[in-house]
Length: 321
Ligand SMILES: NC(=O)c1ccc[n+]([C@@H]2O[C@H](COP(=O)([O-])OP(=O)(O)OC[C@H]3O[C@@H](n4cnc5c(N)ncnc54)[C@H](O)[C@@H]3O)[C@@H](O)[C@H]2O)c1
Image (cartoon, rainbow, N blue to C red):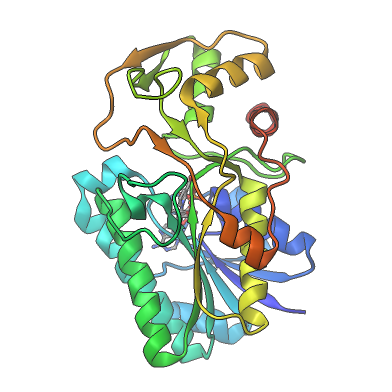
C-alpha cells in the first residue's frame, strides 16, 4: 500500500484530501502543528504534531513510516494578514517549505504535490487564465507561493525532486457525507460568511458591485473541495508513475458572481441573506476563472461536485452538523 505524508492535513483542504486518499486505498500520515487546523479533523493515530519548520522532526516522521510522496498544504492563507505581517508569511510558507524539501531529501522522498494558488497570476490579462501566464503576484501571500514554486523547480533541476504545483481557485463546499468541512478562524471565505450572516442576522459586507461584469459583482471560479482533493490524487499518481514536474490550474472554468452565490445560498437555505455592498477591495480583479484544460487532458480529471447549488448544499449540511 502506498503511503502519503499530508502536511496541513488538519486544515480545510488537507482534511478532505486525507479522506479521499483513504477512500482510494492509500495510507496517510498527517503532519500539522495545529496552528490553524483542528485536532478533530484528523484521526488521532494518523496525526504527527510537528511544525514544518522543524526539519529533523519531519525527517523522523518520514523515517518512522516511509512515504512514497508528500502533499504539502501547510501554510498561512490570509491575503490581508500577509500584507500586515509579511515576515510571518515568508517564514511559515517559504522557509517552512524549504525545511520540508530538505527533510524529504534527507529521507529520500522525491515526489511532492504543492498547494499553489491563482494568486500567483495577480491581475491576469487573459481570462480564462492559462498556466503559461507569467508570475505577477500583487500580495505577499501570492509571492510566497511563487517563491515555493521556484524553489521546487530548482530542486527539480539540481536534485531530482519531482513536483506538481496545483494552482487552486476558490475552494468551497464540504465533504458530501459531512465528515469534514470548512472552519477557518477568522473566516474570510464567502459561503461560510453568508451562512454566518443568516445565522446572526448581522449583514455580510460584500466588496464592490460596480465591476464590469453582468451584475457588477466579482466573478470567481468555485471548485468543490472534494473535486480539488481528487485532483491531488491524480497529481500524486502522476508523479508516482514517472510523470514529469508540472504546474496545473484547478478550477471548473465556469465562474459565478458574488451575487449569484448570494442567490444560491438564499435558495438552498430557504432564507434571505442579510448583506450590504461596500466599496471594492484593493487588488480584487473583476474576474478570475481558470483554464484547467491541461489538468483535464493530461490527468483525466473532471469536476463532479462543483455545480454551485451542490457546493452550497454540502457546505450548509456541514455548517449544521
Ligand atoms: N482555501 C482556498 O480557497 C485556497 C486557495 C488557494 C490555495 N490554497 C492553499 O491550500 C492550502 C490549504 O488551505 P486551507 O484552506 O486548507 O488552509 P487551512 O488554514 O485550513 O489549513 C492549513 C493547515 O496547515 C497547518 N499549518 C500551517 N502552518 C504550519 C506549520 N508551520 N507547520 C505545520 N502545520 C502548519 C495549519 O495548522 C492548518 O491545519 C494552503 O497552502 C493554501 O495556501 C487554499
